[in-house]
Length: 230
Image (cartoon, rainbow, N blue to C red):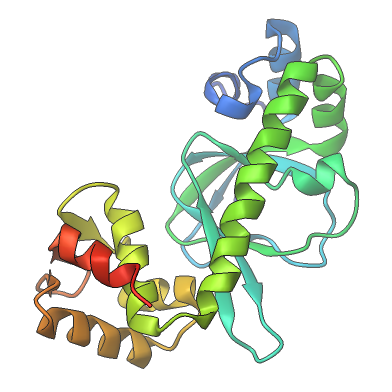
């Protein structure tokens, strides 16, 4: 269940100041932004916002994990990307007012700073550098989303391999970040399809799933070669 801290949180300004997309805002703008903001706590699986809802705020993730998610016409759930801790998300509809074009869902218990759209726009008008930083970040996000959509045409086992390498971030082990069902949702596939792909990758000697099924040891070089194959 969502819990809202309506009074300004003592850490809100600190979180906003550390946010890469907002770091160029002046001290006065950051204080005003923090004073207008609220802090909300979401449990795993709870939506921060839903497609079609009002774009009346932007958010900064203080801790946890929030994923951008859409549903296809066929009913598949496709995860487009995860907001990094300390980063802003949900600001497109603040810059271009309109209804939300996707869902944002907490995949772990998460805490976010909620910045009302009107306060965000007042602050952004004082800093062209911040607007440019958000524009650059939008280009990055659109690129990732296009890659995620185009990746749906690739074989499931190669998509699974690519996602595991992304989550591992250069390490030889990967934490799935929760039950395998969440991993399956990120790829827009059934849990059974994920299990089949993981078994196939394990049979090829490309990974070893940990006991409990929430992580794996990777043969990174071989897994990368498989992920980029035809």
